[in-house]
Amino acid sequence: MSQAQLRVTMGEAEWAIADDERELVERAKSDRAAFAALYRRHYRALSSHVLRRTGDVHTTEDLVSDVFLTVLRTLPRYRYRGVPFRFWLLRIATNAVNRWARRQRRRVLATVPIVGLEVTAAPASTDGGVDKERAHRALLSLPPKYQAVLSLHYLEGLALSEVATVIGCRVGTVKSRLARAREALGAALSRRR
Image 1 (cartoon, helix red, strand yellow):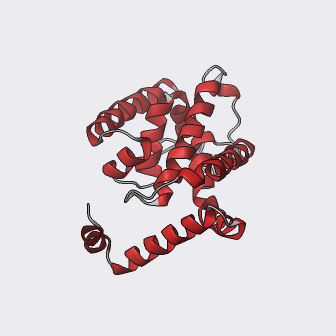
Image 2: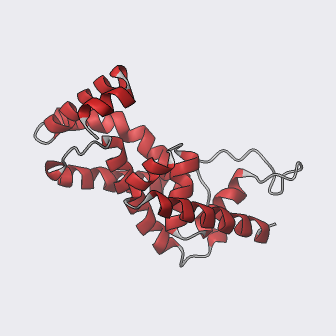
C-alpha cells in the first residue's frame, strides 16, 4: 500500500501520529532519551498484554523487561514497512510470552497463582457464566499459538489482519487458529466445571 493510500485509510490525524512515532523510533536508534520516550509510550500497553497472558505481576515485569532489552538490541535493524511500531512490539512480546508459556505447560496449572487480576465472581458464578480466574486458567492451559490469537484478537482488540501481521502469518491461518482456539477454550472450561 502506498503512503497516499495509507494516509486516506488512516486519516490525517492518525497519519500525523504514525509519522511522529516513526521519527521517534529513528531517533531512538541512537538517542537514549528518545528510547526512554518510546518505553514510556508503550510500557503500559505491553504490560497489560503480557499480564493478561501470564496472570502474574512478577512474571509480567520480567517478560516486559526482556521485551524492551530485545527492542534495545534490535532497534538499529528495525525498518518501517507500513506496519505500526506497536505491532512490532506486540510480536516481540507475544513471542516472549509464548516461550514462557511453553515452559509453564510442564507445571501443574492448579498451582500457578493468579496475581494481579481482579476476580470478582465466585469459582462457579451463579449466573452460569465463567469467572475471570477460571477463564484465565483455561486460557493458560491452551497451546501458546492459541493463547496468542485469542489474546490479541479479543483482549487487545486487534482485527484479524492485524493479528496476522503481529504473529507473522496469513489471515486464513489466524481464522483457523481462532476457531480451534475457541473450541479448545470451550472444552477446557467445561472440563474445569
